Length: 461
Image (cartoon, rainbow, N blue to C red; front, side):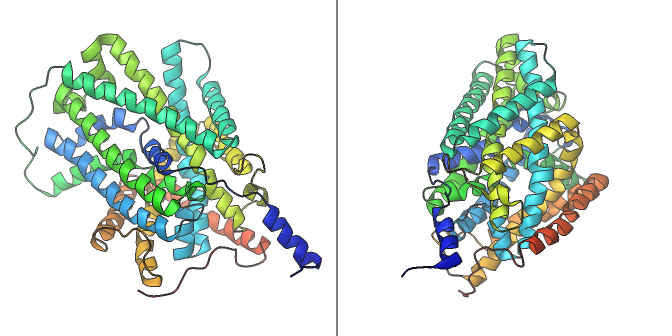
């Protein structure tokens, strides 16, 4: 049938518009999951945990518990990925489970707080290590900005270019971690371990201290959910993303527990609590100053890998927002040559650079946990909603509803604990989040009504 007039021209423009290229597989998804989790936290945070709890069993137990919670979350996200394989991942889950405004607020927080603030802080960390390792006399901010610009350009060249860079950096950081574990296990003499499992009788105080130890652990395990953002560029998202989530998180649990065990073995619980840079301390014991330099290079590579992963994944959320008519229209454009949302990628790079130059990233990091875990909890709850609305997909969460409930409740506990510990930072984070409501209302009016987006199925199983 021939389509005439403006309707025909409009349909031809839509059909001719370039789309995202599905060029990533399960291995890419696994590397993206692991790259989103492993930054510099595991090289430092065992020290923070050891300050809260004081026996090897409790220190290692905190990392095991954090890994279990992350794995329960991955089960839920894997099923959500099978149910909603659209671009934007978590953004799409929130939009279709609740309302477009909830998804918009998530993207708003991602751009202004969670992702950009984290990237600015990690870029500054990379710059410090780069200067320390090379001795070059260049301001930290300039190295951080140049690094963000290079990664922005690489990801604008195509999803395969960005993914290959991310994979190469991920394999390099895994090699650095393997060096730490092997050297700590074979060269360093074991420290005399404490025989007691607990450092105090079972009490509310012990539970509170263990909860405090879990805060840096959960922060270090964060980031795996960003792999869902690239669902639209996975060749088989219903298969590849669940594999990437489960294999990636199980791998990270093994790595994190292994590194913590080596740190406790080499330094002892008390020594770990007095070592702000435990990975460097272990390598110094194993190989002297050369070992400390080697692990410093590994940490630098690890931070660079995190930045690469962030630049690859987060812009897909802003692209999905624009495609729904809830953001600048240009952010929803796909390059005809590279098939990636170049404006969205450039936007992520620009905001991260602005925050880096402003020097406010340390304050912004204080707002991250309370806002991020709100959306974690809402996403876990979304699985209950989808289970009632539509038939099952290819993957089913083991132990649901119990496992999903444990993950969701754990997220709310983290939010409550963060508010109690840092009420001012939490309130500022919530204020920035609330500022997104008038922005949402404005974009919705500009779009001429309800934004587009696949309507959720309503069938009950």
